[in-house]
Length: 253
Ligand SMILES: Cc1cc2nc3c(=O)[nH]c(=O)nc-3n(C[C@H](O)[C@H](O)[C@H](O)COP(=O)(O)OP(=O)(O)OC[C@H]3O[C@@H](n4cnc5c(N)ncnc54)[C@H](O)[C@@H]3O)c2cc1C
Image (cartoon, rainbow, N blue to C red):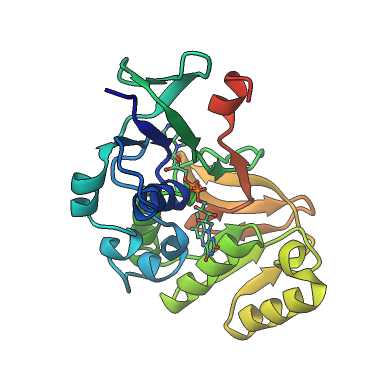
């Protein structure tokens, strides 16, 4: 029996690669290995309708469980821990190994941490997985104080919009002259800045966070490098991503 086509990853790239292989007529064995506890899904709703509770989990998945039953051997909660390209073998966290004929690494990226004191306090959130979104949604809907968002990219701006729609007071800190400046340029950045200001977001531009302030192990505010303090009952850190390139790098790719 020939070795399978193996896809490592649990996001949209893994999902679409698996579907495309079948759509294009690949008939051999297909294994999808993901570190997450469910089948591959897409993340855009996590900062928008899913976060607000306007869409359920079903909206996240590109194909249903039945598709995997019929088309692929899906291994959830099983991160790949090693890759030997000469032997055509992937090592898995459960101690097993998987030979492959062909391999796609679709390991995506992880949120960048904020390198300041207090970033590990309770009440400080990152947003990448559906579990992150569930935790954030519970605190957004259950709390009353100010939501502080650090980061003026898409995720920070989208969560600010969702939090305002949920009735929360929001302060957003960004280091750019305008939010979204690096992706859209200053003119469009200004349009989004004005939109958020009009919707009641307390927007701070060209501002750097020096620390997240805690009490009894929980975040209660942030302090800027200018010494300004803003109270918060939850903090979202959305300052970009780092590629999950460890597997590829260790294999010399
Ligand atoms: C909240 C949020 C909102 C977004 N909104 C938009 C939007 O509106 N429009 C847009 O275009 N983009 C949006 N994005 C970005 C978009 O989701 C990403 O571009 C997309 O997720 C990239 O897909 P991917 O499959 O390449 O990687 P990822 O989604 O990062 O998936 C990588 C997967 O690989 C898994 N993995 C990593 N290492 C291993 C390993 N060693 N073994 C097994 N599995 C592993 C990870 O657990 C993960 O499941 C958003 C992202 C987020 C987080």
